Amino acid sequence: MAEAERLGGTPRDFLSFYTGALLLSQGHGDSLYDLQLQESTQQSLLSAEATDRLHEQVRAQALPFLNPPFVALMFLPLTHLNLPQAYTVWLVANVGFLGALVALLTSSFRYWSRGEHLVAGLTALTFLPAYFAVWQGQISTLLALTVALAWLAFRRGHDGAGGFALALLLAKPQYCVLAFLWLLWRSRWRALGGFGLGVALLGLLALMTAGPVAVLSWVRLLTQAPQLGSYYGAHPDLMFTWSGFLSALTGRAVLTAKEAAPFLIWALLEVVTLSSVAIRRFQPSAIRSSPSFQGAVVLVSSVLLSLHTNVQDLVLLVVAGYLIWDLMRLKERPLVRAMWLAGLLGMHVLVLGLFLLKAAFHAMPYPNMVVVPVLALWLMLLAALTPPFSARPPVPTARSGEAALTP
Image (tube, rainbow, N blue to C red):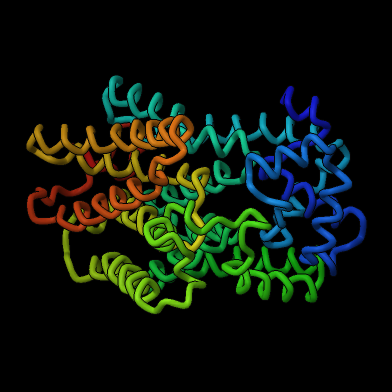
């Protein structure tokens, strides 16, 4: 906050959201996705020192607004403040979103022990990607909170409300696709109805906010996103995805490289990961049908399948971590539970350690070269969970009467 005030602006990701909202407030809805207009607007907002920080820290000349128009509308009230003040307000809001996320998840597992609540809460609040999401002024914490609310609605049998909440993932559409496919594959028609209603309302809001020309420009810009390059802060080798892992491994962007082999390997990994979600339908089990299992698989798969998952977007793993541990409590072997707890805490330490090492030794491998294989291992282990589990029926909790899986 102090740095933003001193610089007279911020080189963080919040700059892109503020730019989109500012263009709306100035009546440039039709030109919302004109990259040259966005860049000139940002140049007018940033001081010379803030611009240098943008080039140095983010390795970009501009941070384009690539989200749908309703996201710009969400930030519109903040345009009444200057950029540093608006960034400060959103920073405080993000802290609130993170606190609400941890409080919601912790209260959702009332049957956990006090020690489990304490460890889970402290781990979530100190997870480095959550810090990045807050510090960058991103919307990732808000989306993680939305996912948690959707999961809670599904667990309580409110499929329509859960699907409606998932529609907000359209703010970052790379996480919206798998959620839709999963609902379709599982024949969750009420959830699909809620999801469709939410998408329709957000689409209508986008049309009313910026007009059909801007919506079409947004869709067209999304198809061009892999080609934006480092000028606009797009660094494929930093993404915590299959494409980012292969880009870091090969030293070139696999989605735009001319070599066919890396692209084919990426396509194969995407298909295998997507299949790991689909085959659940054919394995009847109380665990397979539990909201915790389904939510964990979809979240981890969404991160790997996405074309754009930056470090701040890994805050989604906070939700996945809670759900995975809820599943591990059902294991009758303490050693297996201990191994999974070590794996969850290990991811926390791993991300922090890799970023510290990279900051100290610039020649260190990219963090995604380690984190992505670990996420893939998580998914493989989740896929192997069914046989050892006891298929115990859900037991009503004493307080709320809602169904909950208890050991």
